[in-house]
Image (tube, rainbow, N blue to C red; front, side, top):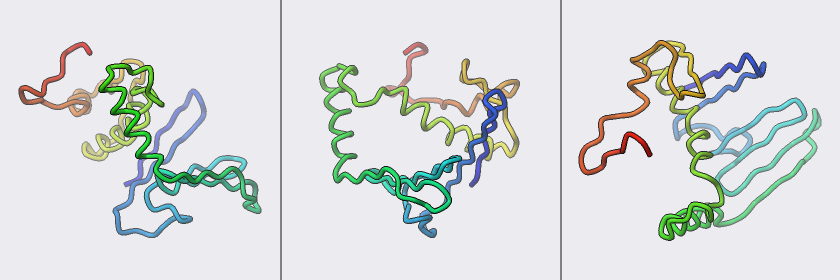
Length: 149
């Protein structure tokens, strides 16, 4: 599935592609992302490794490989929940919400079979109640979300 996000004010386009598990490894990335820019590209090969290449000659840029970083991230989150202290998190919950939102918006567009316009301030689709209905779900007791969090 390929989703294209157009930001006319910023004059930017993001293309996001998701492929099934059995696929080729793009530049060695099996679970990850590739970001293309005007000066090179960045490959996030998995949760613990990234590398970058600069210019037409693909000169190596910054690289990072760490073992167990995902485990440390999860442990940090669990500690913050247990202590009820979100200030000790390595990254705010809002970052996770925003970074995962694009994939969800693309999925809603795919399921409805049409292009959608989204207002990032209200976090609602403009003039499309069918799409807005897919932004949440009916929860079953006792796993209910309050109207105001």
